[in-house]
Image (cartoon, rainbow over all chains, first blue to last red):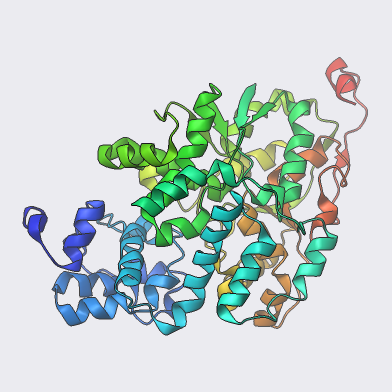
Length: 184
Length: 297
């Protein structure tokens, strides 16, 4: 309905439209996304409330969304979009909101661990080209200070042959990708 | 049938047994796998959460590499990798500007010519009733099939018509002699990448899945995703902490269940790598005189 007016829409809803072509106006607040979301009980704003805030285009509401814990708790399980009668692609909206929340330094304090995990994961890929579990968890522990986490699981994983102590080096497969990313 | 293979990082590490069991059954079902060379990580659930272009460039590089090897089809057994590769193909087909941007990052020609297949796409046409008839054993157990999120959703990518009640894995289990039970958790989320950051959420979601499976009388949960497997198997202690109950139900990769019916040893299928012991056996068929059965045994 408001799709054409998104053209020069400086709001967060406008950003979502520019990045994804998703119009948050399509949401009529039936709440099916919030009812089916596996993480909703942990969220400060349920998924349908996130969409409602975006619809208002009010600066305070937008700040509330970008500094919410919810946007980091979305597991991208795609249950919401599967059930949405208007097919609003909420997982894609959440990706835009997370990236914008990082840009504007509005990450919720409780979400710092989750951001640290994602950052450690990407750094591991940048270093080795593939996932190396010990590298990922090591960096995550340094970033978060959760040094004692999973000290019981790791030795069992190792004994079961699920953990390698040294990484395979495949950095050259992704070097160009990360070089281009840093130029951008 | 010859097909490309993108194993992905998990299958070299925490879900090593998924790869072992796939490679153990492949020659027995006329499946020839050619590995993608120089493959990299697909970006998993982290790249798309914090960097959009990167989340497309990593899978595009893999697809470009498969194209360079002239692969028409690429098997991606990890449901999470499969979802990333399939989603990237759709987005790059729809967004010309993004395709140009990603092409520059990848620095290998990408046209989208290679189609990606999940494990069910690969196995279903191979395991026809005629082929399964020649298997030396059956897998006569009550099971629940756990598809998780990423094999069936979103619709815009997977075009699945039964997003909350898929049947492909149930059908395959039926063919090898199992009894797939109806249950409520087929496509509920396991907590995915919160395994490290919010283990308590994985505990609660895992509990819901194990509780329903146990209540229905299932002897095993069959999965096709390394993340689903590790959350239900390696995170069993955390699940039991939330629930206050013990669960003994084992989690088997679909390739392990099929491998048992094919007469592979538990060792060949990597069953000893599970945290939760999988004491579940195939049943040898009564000696048949057909030449086909003799050939397999």
